Every structure is written in C-alpha cells, then in structure tokens.
Length: 343
Ligand SMILES: Nc1nc2c([nH]c(=O)n2[C@@H]2O[C@H](COP(=O)(O)OP(=O)(O)OP(=O)(O)O)[C@@H](O)[C@H]2O)c(=O)[nH]1
Ligand SMILES: [Mg+2]
Image 1: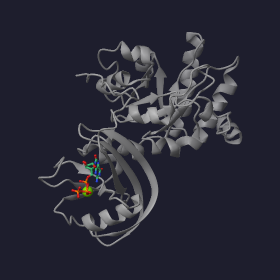
Image 2: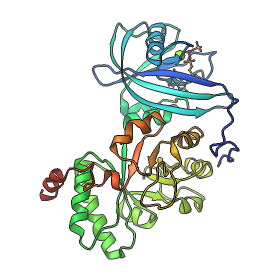
Image 3: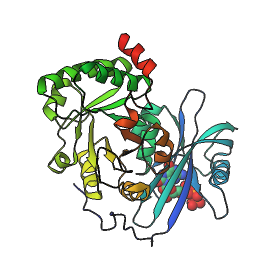
Image 4: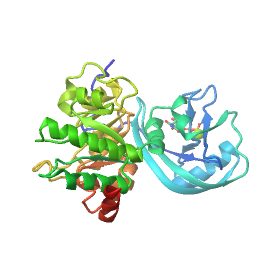
C-alpha cells in the first residue's frame, strides 16, 4: 500500500518532536564479518537486530558515547574509526539521528552484557536480518556503490563517449544510469551494447533510463524519471532486476518506496547547468525528505566525488552526477580511460 503523504514533508518540519542522537558502531572481525546485536525482550523494537550502540548523553562527544556504550553493552574497549553515515529518521514520537561509525580496533571478547544475543554476519548476509527502518540505508552504505553515474548524451562520434565511460569506470564508478537524449534508436542500442560490455568487465551495474522494454531486452536495470514513476501502478520490472527513480518530493519518495525501488536519486541539491535557473534544494531539505523513507538515496545536482562524505553525513548513499563523475571531467582519469579503451 502506498503510504499517505505527510504534511510536514516539505521542509516545513515541526520541531516539536524530541531529537535523539544515537551512535552505533560497525565492528568487523578478522574474517570481515560484522557484529549485530539483537534487541532484548521487553525493550523498544525487541527482537530486531542492530549495530551495537546507544544514545549520546548530554555533555558527551559522539565518539565518547560510542566507547561507553560498547563497553557497557559488549564489554570491549574500542578505538573509533571513520564515520560511515548519519541517517535522519522520523518516528511517530521523535526525530532520530542514527550516527554510524566504523570501529577501527577493539580489545576483549564481545558478549551480550545486557542479555542480548549477538551474531557475526558476513556483509552479504546483512539484508537477511530484520533491522529497524533507519538501518536499511546503513546496510546499503556498507554494501552498495557510493556513486551513481548518469551518462550525458554523446557528441557526433561514439569514441569519446565510450572513452569517458571507460574513464569513469576506471575511476571506480560501479553504478551507471544509461541516459541518452536526442539519439536515434539504432545508435542508442549500439551504445548500450558497448556500455554493457565495459560495465560487465568490471562488474558495474547498468540501469536504462525510462525504457522498460529496452531494460528487459538487455537484461539490465530500469531507472524511472519522476513523471514515469508517478504513472506506475506496480513494479514495472521483476524483483531482482534493479529499479531506481528520480524523486523531488515526499510523495514521489513514498511512491518509489512502495513500488520497491532499490534506490532513488534526490535533488538537485545544488544548482546545476543541466537545470538552468533552478536553485538547489540544499542539504536541510534533502534531510527533511530523507527522514520519511528508508530506501537508499543518492544526492544529485552539482555534486562530485569530493561531496560523498558530506552526502553521507546527511543520510545519502552517496552522490549521483553527470559531469561530476564522467570520465573526461575533473574526477576522471584520462590516462586510465585511454588504457581501458585500448584493452
Ligand atoms: N544502537 C542502535 N540503535 C538503533 C539502531 N537503529 C535504530 O533505529 N536504533 C534506535 O536508536 C535508539 C537507540 O537506543 P538504545 O536503546 O540503543 O539506546 P541506549 O543503548 O542508550 O539504551 P537505553 O536508552 O535503554 O539506556 C532506539 O530507538 C533504537 O531503536 C542501531 O542500528 N543501533
Ligand atoms: Mg543500545
């Protein structure tokens, strides 16, 4: 069922709900498994699995709170590492900020000091564990690409376009939305076949923009522009085939989530030449949209690789971009592009 739109989703969010800052740790063992704890009976959200952690007390730093929580809950001493992401999430009673950090090193043997069960989980199996809604984007951040390239239309020749795609892949892009405007069908199919080959060679995912039939035929994912998303009554491709959507407001995001989209693109966060005259929505509005849904969201609009950490701190999976990720732009590696296309 599609959830009704919420009155406060337009950036006009009531401040009445108390804010709770929760820190949680990604603790990894020598085999790369991640530690989950099961919320004990009688507690809120009992039975769900979570990253160990808890609320930041007044006067504490987030790192200090996480060190204390992991000592109290697991009986281990930890060194806190890099931030993973902060997920803003609205519950009926409060506004949660789930602030997840990697644990760089730990000493001792984790045990369930508060009676909670523990499990060491291979990252690829995390999705099998029933976790609170704000953990879904966290699991996605651990597992899925932090960049989504949206391809620009080609110039007269295919060569430079294919070289730039190879450059983007060489620079680490692993999710590509194939979007070509003003190109005839024959050329579009030719470029798609070539793109499929380059993406397949490095294990990058490909999604075709706006053409369900072509996506089915090529056996790749489908990206829905917002207008198509709004016209969809049910999931247009089978489960297991990637589906994403472009969303600009809470209604579109609710629809994308209800359709079972794997992720969505939200923006423009900043002004961008591809949408002249349109101001960016900014990070505050991005967060206001983020906190209503739990599907992974890429921030789009005037962003590039240098913005990934900022995007993560506002609850994004990472960034989506045309210019910012294209292999002939500042983020690309022309040398690598040439080498990749020569293979
Ligand atoms: N620790 C932790 N809390 C999470 C996660 N995801 C998530 O929604 N939460 C929510 O964040 C809040 C954290 O509360 P907590 O119960 O761990 O806090 P705490 O350790 O300080 O416990 P206490 O308040 O009972 O003393 C809960 O509402 C919990 O449901 C997660 O992955 N880890
Ligand atoms: Mg806790």
